[in-house]
Length: 189
Image (cartoon, rainbow, N blue to C red; front, side, top):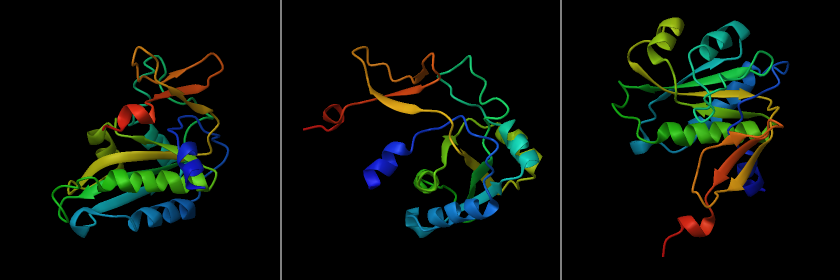
């Protein structure tokens, strides 16, 4: 059921690094994204795929993880993503990407969950360093990095408490808790 697929699509940040993601799987996920809506049908998104451990290490070194967990520098060795999709906007195709990368990233993640994988959209990127490390031409704006792998963490949704705090957190068992607003609190009228 689609509702179950959406519920399983959490922002996973710890993975089983022994389970590699193939380039073919990354291509299949990008092919799903390719078929989604695009503002004015300009289709400006371009992708860099990585399933190579050494290239993955370069990408990992240029992204930041979990802003609400300031004492956690990101997944440790053995729990890092085994695949990445770097989403780029081709400025020569369209000067602005609008919302295309959000739609595409969500589609990639839903496709990943359907395959027993998971991932996380990351916008906290050392863009200049990543551009240099991967020799990304200036015509491409670095929009997002989608980290992918076989999740090893449990992520649960909790109702937002009376204090209204939306910050996610981890308990003593390393379960990741994500506060979510109630349906009746977001539908107006």
